[in-house]
Length: 397
Image (cartoon, rainbow, N blue to C red; front, top):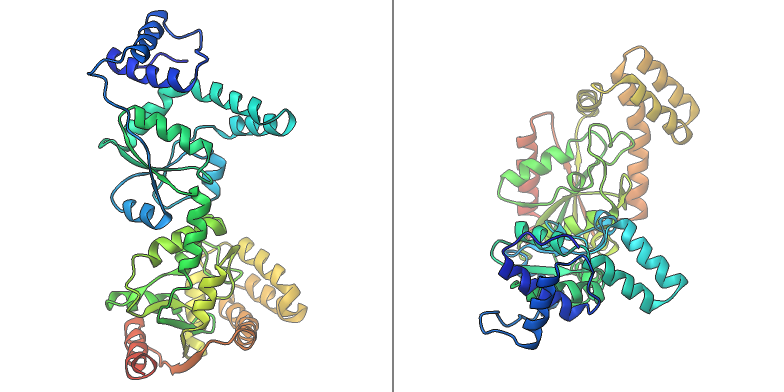
């Protein structure tokens, strides 16, 4: 074990806690420190604080506390990367390799040897645990969880409690949190969808509606993808579906359920990210405002948005689309791209995407659809027209 870098008195308190939990004492500890810690266990002094006990919270309570307290995720970095509570800090008990060693020991040898190995690994990292938590929780209050509220969170929670931290542990762990948030998407909301053909400016209109004091969630921003085969261009790497759901709930929970929520009409997936089933069902129960703008405006928008990317990137996408849009149309689009005729490329791809969107609407119809014809104009005017339709129509009935 590395030498603790706190004051000597504080070290003795932590060593006392460590020895109480892990009777096998590493030989590398200073002998005088070990003897004094053992003495404190047998004859505790009044100046050593009574150990605190971790408090258990339901997922709902845990998330309420998370508005003001730091969340500490003690799972491995690999687990954390796959998905975590937004804003959480990762202070892993085991790194990826250590977790693999413990897991392999459990499978090949048994539970008890795996537990002992885990104790040895954790016992050599107490300085790391204390240093890491000090930077996260200066007020000495933390929310903590592992995967399912088992041994990992129980041991480290008590370790931090013995070190003077007030610790709140998530009942059922991250697994319970995941189940809880997915259920919340089925709660009743008044959902307004902005739909329409590719190039209609739906996302821009959504942002304008947000500026007009309306509740909005930009699903494509959360997914880091604009939805079409070209949607990844200029975007960051997509999150996992799991992390997308976590981020989505974080925004969902902040909104007033009594007020309309505006979303862009999306299919079941946005790039490689899939919408939660319960959320998708809530969307289909909303009102779709289908916007129809002149085709020339749509072509102009697509050229402005995508012609800036390299021809090689665009060519690769068109070659992939050829399987779906037909070899003749794909060949024409590729030829137009080589000739820098971006308007023709956009026109040809729109023919494919318009049919795709119509088929999607027929397969998964929404509860109610309102068609809104939008003239050529700016995005602010379009947003105002849509809101006017909403206020005098479906949302007032």
